[in-house]
Length: 96
Image (cartoon, rainbow, N blue to C red; front, side, top):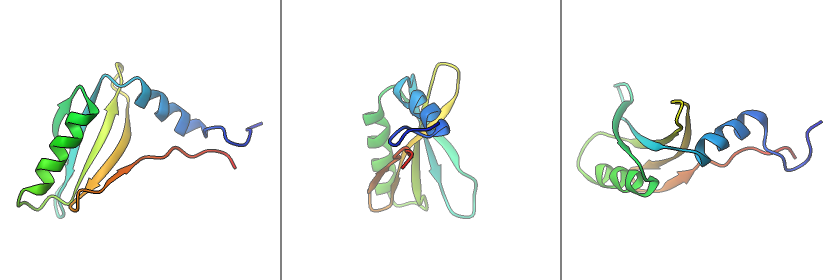
């Protein structure tokens, strides 16, 4: 039985991917088109800076999403950044 405060199963799996990430993919979303893989970085800080610079330029990109990728190619979202450069980190769900 699940205990209060424990991560839910899928969130626990994704958290393990985040903690063991080998690199980070930046995915850009532009309305009326599909999302596109832009760049990969070994450090999260570099991925976030790339997203910030890209969103600061005049373009139609609405959001940059950053995913952690582990050694097996599994991925989990780290967070997203909007046009106002607000970073929204993923918060794993826990049992209440």
